[in-house]
Image (cartoon, rainbow, N blue to C red):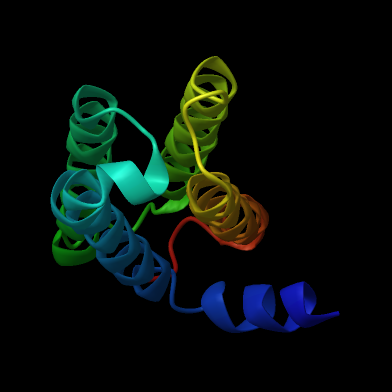
Amino acid sequence: MIFHQIIKKTSTHPKKLFLLDGFGALLSAFLLGVLLVKLESTIGMPPNILYKLAIIAGILSIYSFLNYWIDNRNWRPYLKGIAIANLVYCCITLGLVMDCYEKLTALGVFYFILEIVIIISLATIELKTSATIISNKV
């Protein structure tokens, strides 16, 4: 499985997952808070909701980048923490999609479902990697 290969590689370098997560969350924050707001009529999600999601994504990005830069030898709880936060973000997003479903266009639904699938995949890798990391490894 591809997940098994990714987990094997990332378990020796968990910092790479924090970096990947940080850039992914930064991209989400930009897309939600800048691009999709301008495309409201094409997406259908109200700007106030897009801004709130962008703020959450921005906070998650900061958390991931901080964990990338901090020299901490015990990555397990921090990697597990960002994975759980990502899954909570997905639940919030899914709830908002269901709440605003009548307003969303097909493109809007596609964007949010794609974002959720990508984030859940990353969170799965993070959780599995955090379970394989030996506490004193960097």
